[in-house]
Length: 168
Image (cartoon, rainbow, N blue to C red; front, side):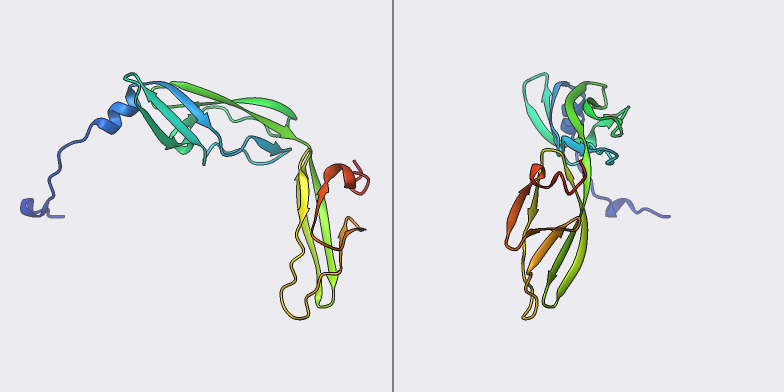
């Protein structure tokens, strides 16, 4: 490889990014997700971390720029503390909750439409069913949850409404 000096770009070194990362006194986390179903894969990526420097200036970065030493066990129900660190080991914590997850098999029927759609719902969440005909012959007439007819129009089902059908 041959590098010609006259073809190189020269830019002054900008230490502000390094300085902002190293002079952090506090980190505030706004996680992307705080509720997980049993066995879900945990990820700290996608949230926002506000880095507060010694001089009080703030910089927001994706939480993927932070490190985690021990991930929470999503096979254990309940609340778990997550601790993320910057390059200087300044910690920031937040809580996640691992909840029961119920598998739901939606079956849709109608002229020109038949389909099964496995999905899951966390305890405390609603199962939203949006019936959208797509095409001339596709008119949804019924929706079944685990074999029981539950809807013929757009509907939001409370988990408590279908607990019997989920064998909870």
